[in-house]
Length: 360
Image (tube, rainbow, N blue to C red; front, side, top):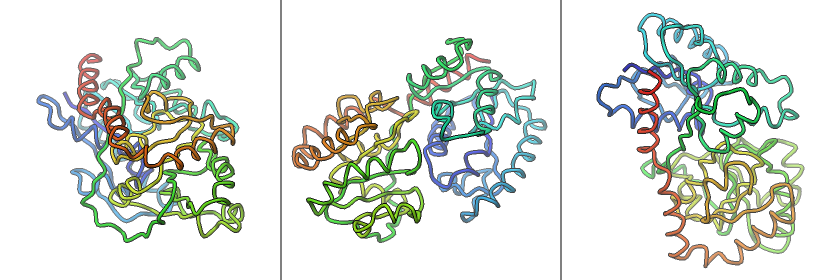
């Protein structure tokens, strides 16, 4: 059984949940007998696939150059698919260029329905139509949570539910062998991970934190998401020196989770929410939104708030700060570890392999 994974996430992301998802899956699937996995990418900036066979990794590049590199990879990928012949094509994002191939079965992973559910943030976004084509024209759909499956069926009710298989992400162990970049973390801080725009709800989280910043020495540490924009620095005002942003490798991120008072995840919507499992793995208390897939992932090992209610966010974070010793107790750490163990890349790979077999 020959399966081809394409270039898209490897060009699009240097770090990120989507490319990490494929790296973890491919690593587990490679060990299967009677299964040949191929992935090709000419000039990738992705760190998870560095030194991976068939992937040429280069230094991070500007997004404009990324468009050119993406176009070259698209042509290369089309030629590979036509020339080599595959039983299954599994794209790593939603460009539907491969759907014209009549020989292979197509399996697409739908990571979330963010653009469809929050169209006010994504005016004229071509991803919506590309994703829709994948949903209708692929032979099978992988949803990464029950919530994502429900969203697909609610938005496209004529899709057969049997066409969708739910396969959860696994829990990723953050690599502590990376050389730490030497970032200096504050003594007391709450941690925010990922992008800060739109539905990620960072601004409302910050506004909820204002009375806490006023009355304590707490800092906010942001991992990823790029440097603070001018508008963000203006928003921070007199608290600018207590709001920090770092680009972290896995080792840095592990350290940030391990030393944080709590990890706060105020997103209004997530298809799954890998950072929750990362935090659990590092023993970090989690305070997060009670929406979308997040309660599926957090179970009873996290505390929840209404992401649209500033008071709800503030009360939950304040409680986490005041009960920090209790949240770091052996009992609570065990609860988080037990929840994390429900999500395994070995289980995900087993279900994916069985799915491939079924559709063939």
